Figure (cartoon, one colour):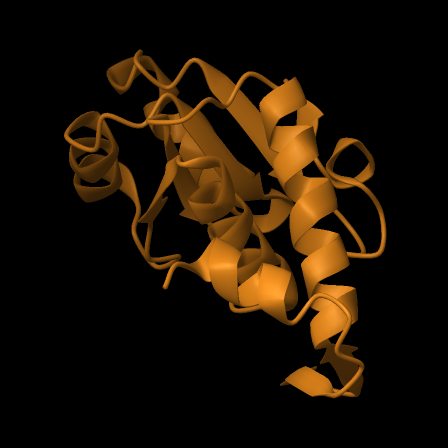
Length: 141
C-alpha cells in the first residue's frame, strides 16, 4: 500500500491525523492539502521521477510536500536545516534534485552555494500557511 493509497482510502475521514502546535489536521484536511500541493508541484514542472530537495523546518508543510511528491511519483531529498557551505553544496550536487523547496530563513545559505549546484534549476520559496495552494506558498525565483 502506497501513501497515495492510504490518503485516498482516508480522504473522507474527519478524525484527527496530524497534530502540530495548536493545529490539528484531519485525514480529510491533510489529503486535501496533499492533493492541492501535488497539483501545484505538477504545474511548477515537477514530474514523476523528479528529485525535489526539501530544506524546511519540521512543519506540516514538510510532510504535505513529502506526501505530495510521493503521490505524483517524484521523490524527496530531505536536507538537514543545519547544513551550510561545502557540505550543503556537496549533498545537493550529488542528489540529482532539479528543484529545491527552501524556507525563507535558509535563503542566505542557498545564495552562498547556488553557483556550485547548477543542476538545481528551480527554487521554490516556502511561505505561510498550508491552507493556501502551492502557488500561494511557493514562488519561483
